[in-house]
Length: 140
Image (cartoon, rainbow, N blue to C red; front, side, top):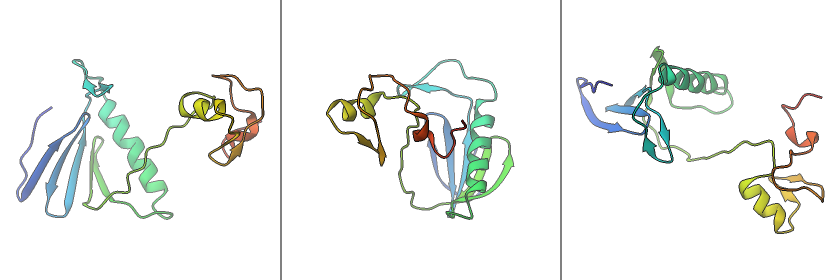
């Protein structure tokens, strides 16, 4: 992927999958087709991955902007987002439908409340959560 130089550009950052250009208080973020696994950039990109990644992020940011204002101002190309430079709230979320990882270790230690949801006794590692715990997205 090409590296660009914009008038007034003050910084450039190349991440695992995104290139970020800073122009004053504006960020230009270009989502690439690079793929990263376990913090290693793999040698072969996935065609259109950057476009899909950017369009999903843009959709979610636009869909929730009335709930929580965010940095996004425009999406001038399928893999490019432009927005305000701001201080982020760093949040990581893992969504799973079964008892694995940290959730399993917590459950195995005897705790039965995971993220506010009470789990029944008798679950085993990798068991699916009971349907009531998929709320609000679970369909019967």
